Amino acid sequence: MPLHVPPAPAPALRSVLAALGSPTAVREARTPSLRAAQGPATPELPLPVHVLDGITATGPSATGPSVTRLAGWRFLIRCGDRAVAAAETRLTPDGWAFSHFFEGPYITSTEQALRQAETMQQPFQPRLLSVPGLYMLTLWLHGDPAADASAGHPEPTDLLVPLAPAPPGIAAHRPHQAADLLPVLTHRVTPAPLLGSPA
Image 1 (cartoon, rainbow, N blue to C red):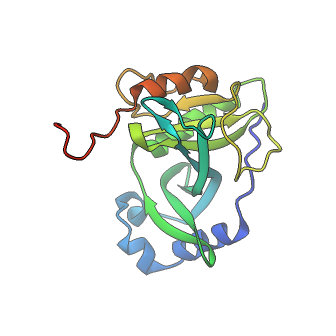
Image 2 (cartoon, helix red, strand yellow; image 1 turned 90 degrees about the vertical axis):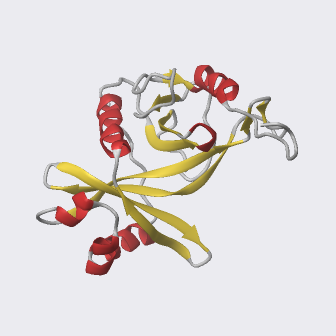
């Protein structure tokens, strides 16, 4: 069943296209693969990047279950037959703007998880879910393909696929229902020490 990739905001896409067309932006990017790419580079597979807030070592926040907020849109930058980098956009007071290019293991890991998700029977809307407290990124397969991609939180039956490198003890590329994985993450988050307390 094909994934229902949500359309990115037009200004976000335009900002990435402008950055790709700017020799200065590409040259100053810390992405050797992008600088060395031969042929045209095109942004593909826009995914909203949500950050998981309200998850602590003592459980979900008092405001209810885990809360997500939209942090940006990520585009895989394809050159030829493979993704060589990614472009991140962020929301500013003036609208969506290009933030930066980057590369690293999450590029290939994202592609692998998306290919894996394409083989599933149920239709999903793909998103990315970042868990800063664990330095973790997951492919979030939202069960409502027509939902507003900029809003919402993981539903219990949504699937979360940890991307490699995953935190120790969490298998990368193994789909988990959100209802099963989120409690595990809650227990893995280490509370920050209080000021003046021993480390």
